[in-house]
Length: 66
Image 1 (cartoon, one colour):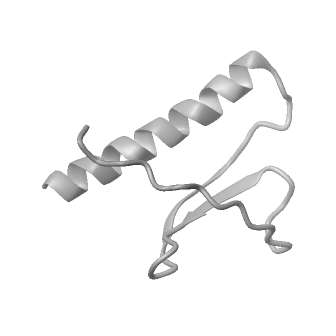
Image 2 (cartoon, rainbow, N blue to C red):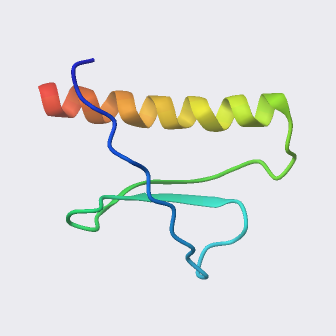
Image 3 (cartoon, one colour):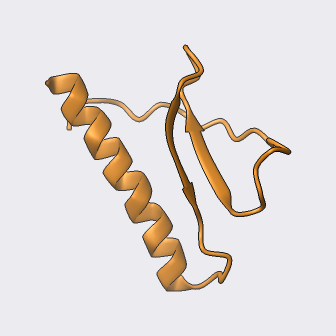
């Protein structure tokens, strides 16, 4: 895609529940995306989680190329 993936720096946020995911821009602290992960850990749930991340990244790349 021609755009490097920046490091993901996990940070504990006590305001979020155990399975809530919030992606925040490290530079301007805007929320990029927020979703709930499945609490049933399985191959399928991990695949869905990774697909969500992939689609978020894809949208960000399309916006940057825009």
